[in-house]
Length: 552
Image (cartoon, rainbow, N blue to C red):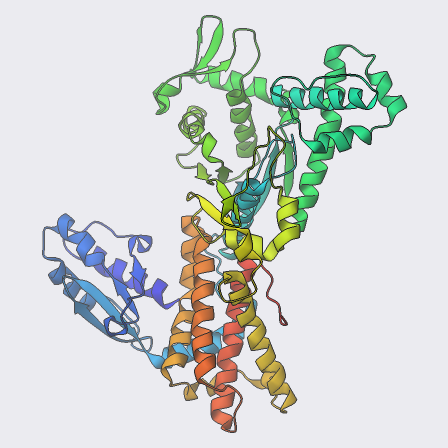
């Protein structure tokens, strides 16, 4: 809250300086200084404006500090330091008032209506329905679901969607692989097709097929036979994926089938629209999207010379369907192997006439699973990989989600299984959840002592003057701005960092100060403070999709 208001005030002040272009508040970077003598918040806007204005950054900083319309009830003082840093000291009276605000707002603290109900769709995971979900998909699920929660907290009407790729060569290979497994149950020496799927999950699926019914399927012509085996395998695998995701705390608003695009003629209609807009050229019997005219490095085939649409055309049709459903913005989470697909999809969206930036793509990098200091293999082709289900059963959904969200999604991640199962301060999710449980135990103890902590409304915070209490209040005050920044930057990992910092501040406070004591004023003030800590931790963990236990 305070950092957001500071950013707005400094942006307004900068925009009033002669020769300075308008500065948007989201361009103003507010940071927490490492050293307390540099204030509670710091801003380097003057240094960034210096080259634009052709002036010394310290002069600009002094002008910004004098022009900024800051609430004296919130800001104690502003200092200009070094080459041009603006250091801000928050008024302690405001910090104590903010604790009361946290208690008053409860679960809504940190939320806003900034999004104004704008419709946003986030598509993530969207793994091919050719086998159980692996841990890379689990990371995408954690990131995507947390992003949806963040957007909703900021007032956006956000939906989640899983795109089921149930058409094309991979689906056919899956069907042929299941058929070979079924034939083996009949005693035949059937080979898995080249490029097929050898995983044991298909063995179990084949053995569960009613023999009399599927023996009749074997008598059908090859294309119909493959289609039936493929449809059955896809349904069973998608059913398992949905079950695994639900156990991981992820419930999608929509499961969209690629096959529906072909069945309804949406792919052909999209091609016609592109052609009508002059974005298609025919060469050597194939149809090419003139994507080089829209920012791509070359044109792309969208219908092969044999008349079969490429994957790209199907993907364009899918996004055209999203646009037709009225989304103001769509955000896709893709794996690193799809990075090259971004410029061609951007070009296709421009060719269709959609607003610039309507499609936003985030890359979710690989996960290296580590056990005993060694990497665990994850080859789906060989059928040797750790599934999401196995991971969740091994370490639990809370731990998995928190650890997946420790880094930016575009950064490769080492997931240490041994650390995940460690119940100590070394495990960050255990450390954070333990802080929440510790506050709950304090409140239970207070109740046992006859203290009515439900009557604690926050007025008692005037007694909070110790350095550790002040540090806690400052960290709590940063939460609303942090949520806003995490949503705007699409970086849920900011929440895990905040949770760790708040937990560390709480433990430092707890080890030095007794909450429930004979000093009623101090006890009630500290009860108000720890209740605020508990509430903010619960709110932050909820945005991560992680539980906030009251006992551990």
